[in-house]
Image (cartoon, rainbow, N blue to C red):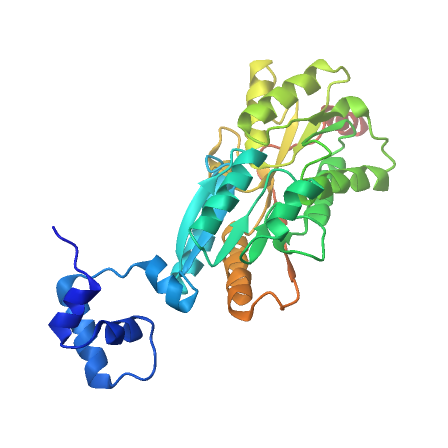
Amino acid sequence: MVQSTVYDVAAEAGVSTQTVSRVLNNYSKVSKDTRERVLAAIEKLHYEPNSLAQGLVTRRTKTIGVVVYDISNPFYGQLVRGVSDTAYAGGYEVIIGNSDADPKKDISYLRVFSRRRVDGILATIADPSTSHLGQWLHASCPVVFLDKFFRSESCSFVTVNNRRASCEAVEHLLSLGHRRIGILTASSTASDSIQERYEGYRVALQSQGVAEDPRLVAVSERQNQDGGERAMETLLRAGGMPTAVFCSNDAMAMGAMQAIYARGLRIPQDISVVGFDDVPVARLLRVPLTTVAQPIREMGSAAMGLLAERIQGGTSLPHRHIVLDARLVLRDSTAPARCAEEETQQDG
């Protein structure tokens, strides 16, 4: 099937190609009758405008680029859904790139999006180093970071109250009598969101006078299920068996559960597990996961709204930081520490 051109539309409507362009770009100086004839011709011929060509006139392509850390992680699927729903409602198309936590892929997508003349970019980037972040901050279009953010007045981002929510999760474990609480986290070069979750862990321990034990801290470069499994294996080999573990995201928590089962241990009888995200599968696991629920779709929607605001308002707008609330959801993967249970039975 031969695709119709703007010339075909103009001939069908009996107008010039310039008039067709004015209708497509919603210029006001077109009569109602002419506009209706052009729109009828477009529908009849199934004409699809060339967004790049339109962009040369309007300097807008009505497309945005989205770079996510790991699309196989259900968290990012939900996040992109929130972005795309809001983008569609605003007349934007979405181009998605998966970085696999590779800084080189991050920059590659940044360049691709620039060549595609996207109106703006939403990003969860893998490398927060000054040189890498600087390339994003000096992109040719507005950029908004989401989930993995960086403390800077030079960028806009959407995140949740990571520190407070993590502190609440670890306080829950402490209230169950756990004192040997491990954490699966990322390296010190990770985004501020991951660092804030580690800070929340430390604050909760300090509030109960529990000393932090380095043997209970396991670091993974990969914040996915495989990374969580390996980090948990390291924790179990380190000595001083934890009675509970707090994981920086649900994917790592699911990996930790696999490692615990492989050791012949039970959840939560031997080790309690807490995650962070509340992806849909968290409640469907063999032992439903206690986790911090992020408003994932709301984050995506808020980020798209913030990006649209910057696209319309220009770079002169001050940067904004949106912090949404996250909350602890209790399920079956946490229970009182065995020593606490024994003490209760002796007291009775």
